[in-house]
Every structure is written in structure tokens, then in C-alpha cells.
Image (cartoon, rainbow, N blue to C red; front, side):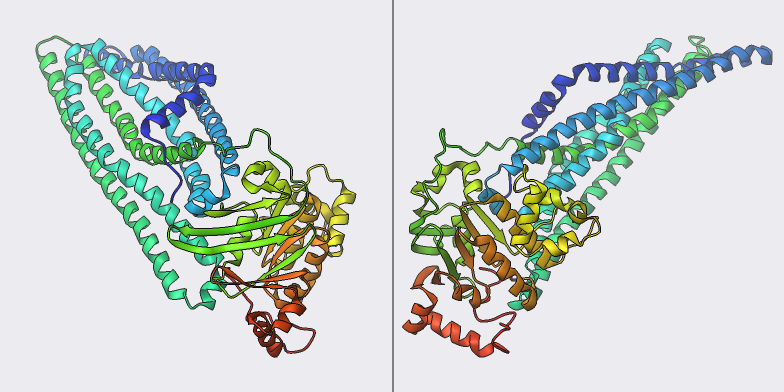
Length: 596
């Protein structure tokens, strides 16, 4: 379920909204480009004058003044053209910057459930590929298009000034050009729109395949995923090739229009000179005028190719920007305590396909609950429901006696924190990365949080300690270090309820043991839910909840469930049987759940 795309009318209205507060800059850019173009068009009449001087047998010295004028025109036109292009690019960049800010602001406030429905690849493609396409057009194509349009309009005026019949002859090419443009736009818009969607689907499939590589390999799904990647890539490539073929035919038709128009102007000039209606120099100026139209017409119509792609991308951005903000309760209530109650919760990603069925849990403040079960039992889904990412299709979830929906997004974020095995390290100083959780944290606060999760030693040993740049382009952290960083953010944010969804699954055996200790410290004093990757995590919890096919089959302490001799006891026995020694649990065991 992809994010929406704006209609053409709404996209044009959005451009108008962005342009309105910048009208002075727009007027200045248009005036400068108009002056530059008008000055540049003076060259054709001057060349025509030089031809007339030669026909009349005037001496070579007679061309000195026209030559000086040509040099002056070239200098002035060049300077004003550069200034006009700069103003237009600045106007476009300002508008794009505001649109990009609106996109990011809306994306950050989208309900996570909506993002998951569309797939993160769709949103990623809009924030990267679509923005890049528009930026490219703004920086290069937009100034060229503005100058080309002005050149075409003013050249036709110049032809009319020389003789109105020259302008009529030039207009013979217009029906061919208009028909070509209409044909191109009619065929190009659906192709480019479909291509942008196909690229988003391709990126989503790549994210799914690469991000879940361990799961894909574990369940022997490699061939199926490669097939899907190939299919979606082929769709995107096929649409791109169709666009290129369309553009080739487009330019071929434009060449025909040029030949027809130039022939008409030359024939008209011949007839007018023969009848002494105009001079040879005037006919030469008319031919030069029309010939000078070749480039701007090709630029203007050729840029229709970029314009269609940019228009499709712009509609996708506006579609996200126009999404309604999530409803916020008029007076969001704060939970009275950190107790969590799950009553009759039912949830399915698709109607009629429930993943969870009638889940009931009553968790005391400060209690630690381990969620255990085979792959597909619903552990991760339940964790996402508790974090407010999804809404139950049936039943309710309350925190401190307040329904999760009634808390509002801001209160929910400050109340519940979810950490998964996929942790992002933001590019920048390590201290800034930590302060994302608490912007007002002091350096002492950061060190205390790092020490709590056992990360202070390696953090202070970095080249520039807490000011070391990490993430993309900086110092690369190990998987275990990245997870410790996430746990330190949890300590700084200090939410009363925390959820760990296999947060130690990617670290390996040695790293996992260190992370389990870090997680124990970070969760101390909080109501917490741990999707257990290793049963040692379940053994240390206050309560173990065993899920099977979306239902709670067992609940109780580790000792109680072992004594009951049920499914959990069987899992524990299998786990201990596969442990190479008492202190080193296996990297993967029966309770391993890479997908949830």
C-alpha cells in the first residue's frame, strides 16, 4: 500500500504556494533573463546589416562599428544571462529546500504503521531519488528552460518586426511541434510515473532481502528473493528503456519540424528579396533568427523529458507532504504508572489472517517479561503493538490505565521505547548521536549512560572520545557497539516502559553476553518486554510468556514453567542439550526467532 501521489492540479497548486512568498525574487530573475535574451537577439539584425554593407560595396572600415556592437552585446548578454540563471537556480533551490523540509517533517510524524504498510523503500525512494531528480532539474534544466522559452517568444517578435510574413513562415513548424509535444506528454507521463513507482518497489525489495539476509538464508528463501529482486529490477529497467525509446522518437519528430520551418523561411526570404520587399540583409537576419530557434526549441521540448520525470517525482513528494497529520488527543493524558494491560488483543496484517488471537497480559510496574516462541509465533508483532506502531484490530492495550491511542504520539514516544536488532548510527559526533534521546544531556550524563551499558571504555578510547565522528563517513562501530549505543540512548531517554526485540541477535555469542548484561542494566527499574533470542534472557525475566501461532500457551516464571513440563520446558531442554558448555550458550538455538 504505497504512499499517495498528488494529482497534477494539486502539484501545480503546491508550486504556487512555494512561489508566492518569493515573488520578488521570481520577478527579478524573469526581468534579468528577459533583458539578457533581448540583448542577445540584436546580433541577427547587426549581421544582416553587415551583409547589406557588403552588397552595397562599402569599405571594410564600415563594419568596425557593427563589430564593436557585436562584442558589446556578447559581453552584456553573457553577464546578464549568468546573473539570470543564478537567480532562477536560487529561486528553485529555495523552493526545493522548503519542500524537502516539509517532506521530512511530515515523514517523521507519519504513523509508523502507515510507513510499514507502504514499505520503507517507498519513503526512501521519495526522500532520495525523487528529491535528486527535482534538484537536478532545478539546478540545470530550469534556467535553460526559462532562457529557451524567452528566446523563442522574443525571436518570433523579432521575425514579425523584420516582416510579418517571416513570422508566418516560421509558424508553419508549430503544428508539427505541438502535435509532437502532445503525443509525447500523453505517452510519457504514465511511463515516468510508473517508473518512479517501480524504482520504489525495487528499493523496498532490496531492503527486505538485504536487511533480512540472515532470515532469508536460514529459511532457504534465497532463490525466491533473488527472483523477486530480478523481477522488480526488470520492471524498472523495462520502463526506463521505454522512456528512452519514446525520447528518441520525440527528437526525430522535432527535426522534421525544423526542416519544414527553415525551408519556409528561406523560400519566403527568396520571394521577398526578388520582389524588393526586403533587403538581402533582412532576409539573412530572418534566416539567422529562425536558425537560432533550433537550439532553444530543442532545449525547451527536450527538457520536457526531464520535466516529466521531475513532475512525477514532485507529485510523489507533494503526496507525502499533503498527508494529514496524525490525530492528537486534545489533552493527552500521562499514564499513572508503568503497568501494562493487554486485553483480548487480536491483530492481522491482512483481513481474515490474524497473527495474534485473544492475547491477555497484565504486567505490573517494573516487571520484566520475556516473550518466547518459535519463528512466526507473533512475538515481534506483539512488541510492535505494545510500542504503538500497529493498532490492534480487536481488544485494547493500556499503560497506567490509559489506552495507548489516547496517549498521543508524543506521550507514547516518551513512555514506550522499542529497540530492535536493526540499529542506525547517525553520521556525526558520538555525543550528538546520544543526545538524540535527550538534547539537554550534559557530558557527565552521556558518560553515565555509556557506563551503565558497559560502553564507556571503548567510547573514551575513540580517537576524539565522545566528539569522534561515527556513522557514514566516520568511525565505524561494531554491531555490539551500535547496540550499546542504542541502549545508552534508552538510558538517557528514561522511558518507564521498554521493549527489546532481539536486540542482541546480531552480535555473536561473546558480544551477545556483553549485550545481555548491558540490557539488564538499561532495563533495571522499568517495565520491560524482551523478545528472547536466547533462553538465558528468559531465565532471568520475572515472567516468561510462551506464544504459539499467535496465542499465549504458557505463562509463569522460568522455574514454574520448567516444573510444568510443557513446551517451554522442552525448549529449555533442547537449548541446554545444544550448549557447548555451561557458560557459553549457542549463537542460535531452538528459541532463535530472526523474523518474529
